Length: 281
Image (cartoon, rainbow, N blue to C red; front, side):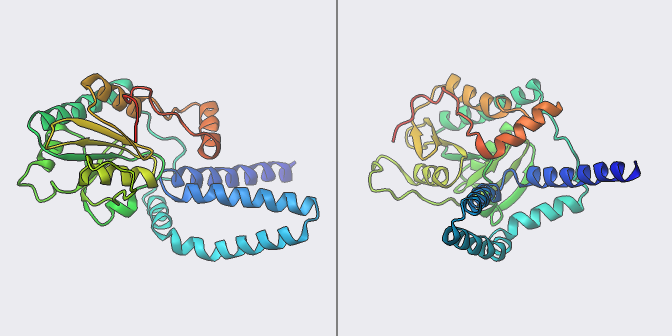
């Protein structure tokens, strides 16, 4: 009897540890690597089942090489995970953002964008999603502050030392300012695009981030997503996209919803809002 109870406790503890590791990896590049590793492991099992010796040998050596490469390539993500463990953040449930809390953030950011475009102040706001952007904000000026209209405007004010770079935000905080992003250099990109628009396209080509661009020449707001650009967004479109970002993908506390979310980490690609104004190259 005791051995059965001990086995159940053992399995529960190991399952909880694996679950928390997966949750901590969300928002980093490592989650993409785990998808590839799982696919390789599945192919390896299939090859062994079908007695494909050459394929099994090839995949086995690839996994062995990855076991040495992963700690080196993903050192920042592993360090972040260990830091969170050290801070006692190994809890089960994430905080749920209420609709009111999401609406406050939408109004603050939309208000800042309206002010910036009305005064033709150039700006670049990057909203982090599942793919972490630590490579770009770790070398920038860390702010870790509340998301407010006044702070966003002051960062991009022409006399502010941070105004030339981008700001990176997530759902709960303004992470950093003065961030420098990779530029898109595809030859088909129109000469219409300036450095800000190329930077916005560049970061969306290597991540799933959403980027709002305010043009200081034209005084309009554009959106970059998935390597595509939507120009001259209306106010209601901006608010709709922001509302979808903050409130459209909630993390809920019910265990059934948590299991569904955990499964979607690997196999579900979430759809963007239809209110992007028609994305074009």
